Image: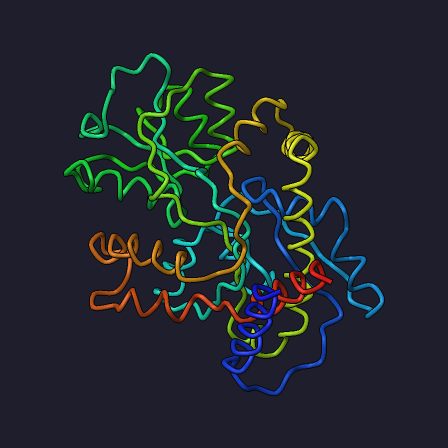
Length: 330
């Protein structure tokens, strides 16, 4: 009961911090992306959880497929979607470069990226990548993972030849021998491991940022109630994912047209336990963010830590989660 009361109290406090603005009328349609790297989005779509919640209000739901965080953010910032499923650090990069977005929810904490080499590669360490071709998708978590990994090994992006390819093309380039390494992304990475024998050269969970849901500032101010409904549907999907790991793996396998063992490998690296944006997420993003400045990915002098503080917006998720906890406690 004490924990429930605390959650409700926090929700009330967070609500007081929400920006004051005249709310707009609810839209006739809400637009979300879904992605194989964001399994709860697949649950949400497949079970029509949001459609069931919004249909009585006359709001329809449109789904747009995203191949990576860069595409997801392009859709959001270009006005094609209202919600974007991305990696947390990619959202930081987008905000730092002028996109007025807010991260409102944490879908999961995956270890979805690593540096991958072919099964017969002589490369044994990140330092061995010097002078080699490495495929990566610019503006995504795997790309930033590559930069951080190089930095940790005493290298920088100029010490390798980065070949900018979308994630599926990066996998093909690796397996075809066009590049010597690839900054991979699940489920493509898991597929390459199991189907082509590709080897994870370097893993670092701390360099993997969280899977998050973001909206534009304008949408956050004008549609807080709708955002709460979307978060509530995501919470349903998350709880179902936790309770049904085998069914989740089958869903991912079916949607992404993957062998079941590939889906299971991806999900074995995914933690769905904490969906509330908070101090641990802020800390993780701030720890990783300096690479954006050091590699010239944001304007010189950008206060990246300040950008993270502006980006992470926990209020609406806190209200939804507190209501869910209170309901469960009754």
